Length: 94
Image (cartoon, rainbow, N blue to C red; front, side, top):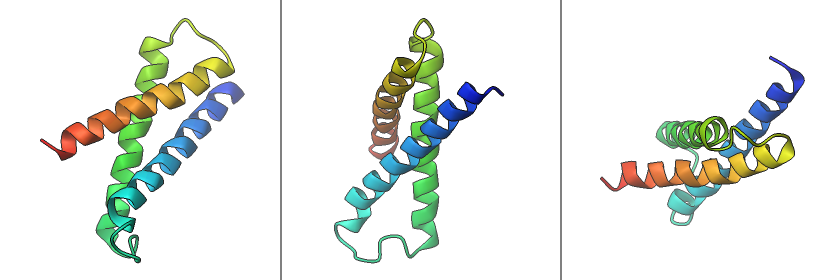
C-alpha cells in the first residue's frame, strides 16, 4: 500500500466516523443525554461508519476513476458519504 493509498484510506475512515457520529447524535443524542452509553449504540455507529466508508470507496473506484489527486479524494468523501447516507436511510426505512 503506497503512502497516497494510506492517506486516502485514513481520510475515508476519518470522514466516515465523523459523519456517523453526527448522524448518531442527530438520531439518538437529541432525545437522550447519554446517547453513547449502550453497547448497541456503538454497534450502530460502527455499522453507519462501514456503510458510509463503502459508499466513499465505491464512489472513488467506479465513478471517479478518471480523476486524480486531492480532487478525487474530496469528491469521493462528499459523494460517497451521500451515497452511504442514502443506503442507510433506505435500509432504516424499509
